[in-house]
Amino acid sequence: MSSKHYDLAVIGSGPAGQKAAIAAAKLGKRVAIIDRRSMLGGVCLHTGTIPSKTLREAALYLTGFRQRAFYGKDSAIKHRIEIDDLMSRVDEVVKRERAVVHDQLKRNDVEIVDGLARFVEPHALEVDTGEARTIVEGEHVLIACGTRPSRPDHVPFKERRVLDSDDLVRAVGGELPKSVIVVGAGVIGLEYASIAAVLGIAVTIVEARDSMLEYVDEEITEALSYHLRRSGVTFRLGETVASISYDESGPVIACLESGKTVSGDRLLYAVGRQPNTDRLNLDAVGLPVDDRGRISVNERFQTEISHIYAAGDVIGFPALASTSMEQGRLASCHMFGVPCTHAPELLPYAIYSIPEISMVGKTERQLTEQKVPYETGVAHFEEIARAQIIGDRTGLLKLIFRADTCALLGVHIIGDGASELVHIGQSVMAADHTVEWLRDCVFNYPTLAEAYRVAAIDGLNKLQRRRALTPNS
Image (cartoon, rainbow, N blue to C red; front, side, top):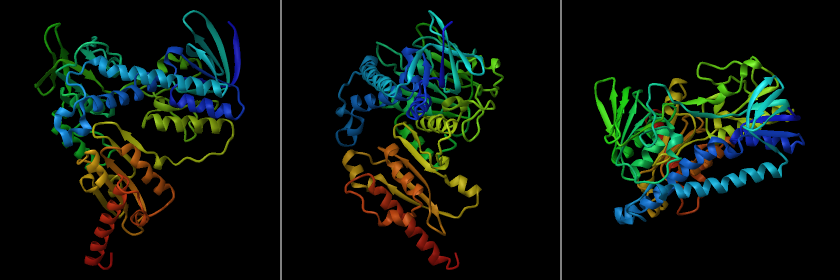
C-alpha cells in the first residue's frame, strides 16, 4: 500500500474537521482530511444541521406560517404540500453548501482523501476507498468522525414507517403523513416535531423524562411547550416506549410502559446518537471510549494520547455545529503551539424549533444553586414594533443580571430570529458591559434588537422597586 505523511491527519469533514484542517493549513502545515467524498461536509451538511434547518424554512414558507397572524391559513403558498416540495429545497441547499466546503478546503491546500479511516498504529491510518487502500501518516491526528442516530435492536426500523432522523431527510416522493409519533424530546425530536406541526401533521411526543431540555431556562421551555401544544402537539412526558409494531396497511402502534398506546402513520425515533468511534479500531492505539462511545478530552481537546485530539459530536455535549467549529480550531492551535483564548461560558446555543430558542450564559436555576443574587428583565415581542410587523406576537427576550453589580449573566430568547439576536447579548457579556449599557444603547427602530433595551428597562425597574422596599439590599 502507498503512504503519505502529513503534519495533521483529520478524520471526518464535518464542522470540527473542516475548521481544524483550515486552521492548520493557514499555519503552513501539510494537512489531509479523510472522509467519503459523497459525505464531504459530514453529517452536519448531509443529514443533520443543514437539511433540518432548510426543511424548517421550506415548511415555514410553503405553509405561509409567518403570515398567518395577518392573513390566516389562506396565506399558504401551496395547500397540498408533498414531500418532494420540501426536499427539493433541501437538495439544492446541500448541493450548494457542499461546493462551498470543497472550495474552502482546496483553496487552503487541504488534501481531501476519499474513504473511511481506521487506526493501524498511533501515527498511521488505513484508508479504505472501497476499491483500494492507502496509509495516511500524521504527526498529529484529530478525530472528528461525528455520530449517527442510535438504532437499538428493539426498535423495528422500516423505510417510510419507523424512521431515524437520517431516514427523514432522505425521504423522496409521496404525500405527507397525517400523524406522527416522535420518540424523544431532545433537540432533534423537538425540531422535527414542530416542523411537522406547522405542516398540519398531528404530532405526539413521547419522552421518558418528566421535563425537556433541562439545560434551557425553565421559562423558555414552558413557553415552547405552550406554543407547541397550541400547534396541536400532544406530550407524553415521563413515558417509556415498551414496544413498537405495525402492519403494511395499518398505523404504527407504540405501546407505553404505563399501558397507554399511541398510534400514527409514522414513528420518528430520536433518542440519542451513536459516536462513530466503533469504526476507528481504537484498540490499535489503546485509546478508550466511555460506555456511549465518546472520547474523553482535556480543555485543549487532547486525548490520553498526546498527539491525538478529538472534537465535535464525538466528545459529547453540546454537540452543536458552532461549538464543534470552535473546538476544531482550538485543537489545531494547541497542537501547533499557537496561543488562543476560549470562553466556554459564552458559547451560544440555538434550538431551531418553531418558535426557535437561543441562549447564552446562566439560567435562573443555575444562579439559584450557586446562590448568586440576580434580577430578570423581560421584553415580550407583542410590545416590540418590529415583531408586530413580521407577525410574531409570541416571542420573548429575557435578561438575567446580578442584583448588586448589574453585570449581565444570561440571555434567553424564544421567538423569530432568536438565534441571531442572542449574539448581541453574547457580545455584551464578552465586553463585561452591564444591563445599564443595554438600557442606554440606541437600537435601530423598528428592530427586534430593541427588545434588549425594553428588557433592560424592565429589569432595572424591578431592581429599583426592590431596593425601595428593602433599603439595605
